Image (cartoon, rainbow, N blue to C red):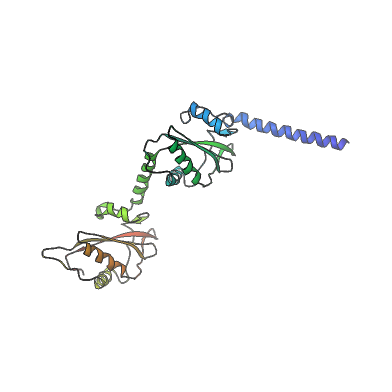
Length: 291
């Protein structure tokens, strides 16, 4: 009987202490239990969210906020893969979602006067299934309310930054048709200058000789000059996968591209700091003799 009483007292004490610990954490971190009105969330939106979400123990501020794999720019990229890009730059849609302690998103809702846009935003969010790194307070994972203004304009700026970063190792002054190449090539990681340039077996003279052996004779009309810009990418493995040519004479352009596709030799790739890199080759074909 005495043993039974002692065990009961121990269990009750344990439950009481656990409740005390939880209350202590909540009192030290009042933001867990109270969502404040702020610049990022209006009183009207908050009242609406209270009706739609279980906001118990949800935080809007934390020691560390949730992290999407690859950062918020990557989240925007994933979201806009599914959100229709034809929408206006100023859709004024606020997307709210809760990143749970597990890192998964279980609750999300879009708010704006336009029901169609709201549905599109929620559908896009549903398809972004990656797991987040949860927010923490005092190293403990907490539920966190994310506020995401759906801005096509921000996404466009992200794309511009990505495009610029792709081209940071390409000297635009040396590539006459760079704007066109952006539309036909994947230029990610491509350079036009390197510590060592690509090497064709036995050198560039061998490349030029073999190239002109495999292309058909380009017939020129009276006073016509051959003026074709040939571009190709020597990949990290030494193979050529992307070829295009630019010029006014379509027959010359086609034959210039076919010439590269007929060469099967593997190049020694370009390198930077000893590592192979993708290299953009510019080979102008003009009315002159090649050595």
